[in-house]
Image (cartoon, rainbow, N blue to C red; front, side, top):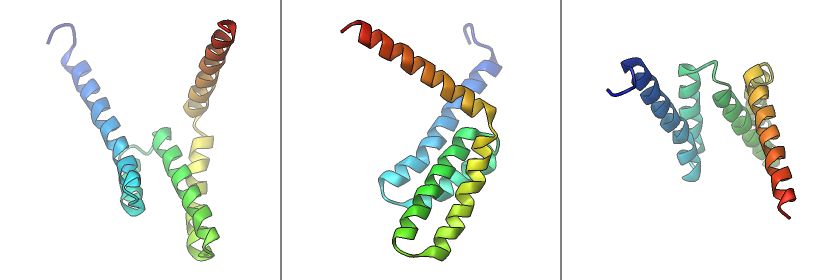
Length: 120
C-alpha cells in the first residue's frame, strides 16, 4: 500500500465515487432528461443531506425549472418547484462552508486578475 493507509485509500475512493455520482445528474441534463437529473440529485441529497454542493445544485435546478414553468403559465407546478428551490436555498444560505469556499474562490480570482493585469 505504499505510503497510504487503508483508511486513506478508502477515503480517496469514496471521494472519487462521490464525484462520479455528482456528475451523473449533469449527464442527464446534457441528454435533456430533467426528471432523471432531479431524481439523481435527490438520491445524492438523501445520501449526503449536509453536502452544500448538492443543496446548491438542487436549489439552482428547481429555481431554473420554476422560472421556465412560469413562462409556460404552469403556475401550480412552478409554485411547487419554487417551494423546493427555497428549501435548498435556505440550506445553502445557512451553510458557512459554502460561503467560505465562495470567498476563497473570489480571493483566488482577484489574485489571478491582479497577476494578469501586471503582465500587461
